[in-house]
Image 1 (cartoon, rainbow, N blue to C red):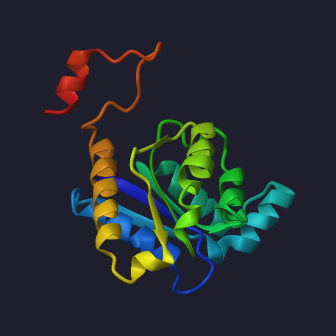
Image 2 (cartoon, helix red, strand yellow):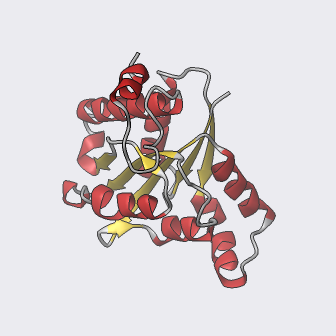
Length: 194
């Protein structure tokens, strides 16, 4: 069974960040109904993440979260936007992972914020973070401003598209990565679309 780890860094309960994470997970599940989803609320691990940053030793709860993320087939990662970037808690969690833990892992990224002005966080903060970790974010990322929740039609459309792309990557309908040299034979691309 395909397993997806969902990491959400919302600070309140309920949080729009968790709502977006759930929406992205549901969109993926609508395409891959047999997927197992494991949610990690970083809010509950904030003290453990900080202690690990200071000591280098994870608590049992943090170790479980790290193992969940590293053993999952794919990752959905959603953060609130603070000061035009991802939250410190979100970044700290990914800082405690082994640098190679996400190599080649498909990732669906999302973010939430008060206004549409912060939507570029997806391309200017989250994509570089996951590129550094050698993960493979899908093409469509989803940003949800406060106004998106009032009439979520467009948000649902974006989440659905992102979920389909992520599900395709998880079900190996898309080549995971180019071979050495970056060249993917045309025949391989055609077979991937069958």
